[in-house]
Length: 118
Image (tube, rainbow, N blue to C red; front, side, top):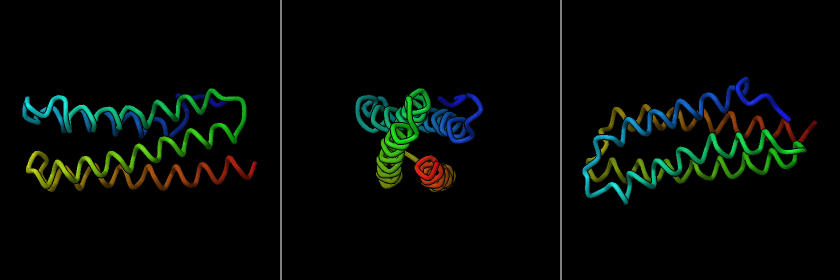
């Protein structure tokens, strides 16, 4: 088991989730059950899967949950790009969040590799 609160990847995923919640708070009310809910669900899924994996009994299991978290990050990217194309999210905010996601994905791949090699 890993100490969750000390995992840099988990802390960055929490920060990303907070930023996604803030970014989607200005979305129109009619998107509450559409892109707002989907983007937030994906964002929450990232640190949640990292947390679940950290509590598992093996590095292989942890790596599997990191893979699920990474899939959610790609899903989140897609929803944010769609939001931008619909003029719900400005270019500057989109770029900022996409940079966070990209950094998280790189950390995720590196961490998976480390886990599987140990």
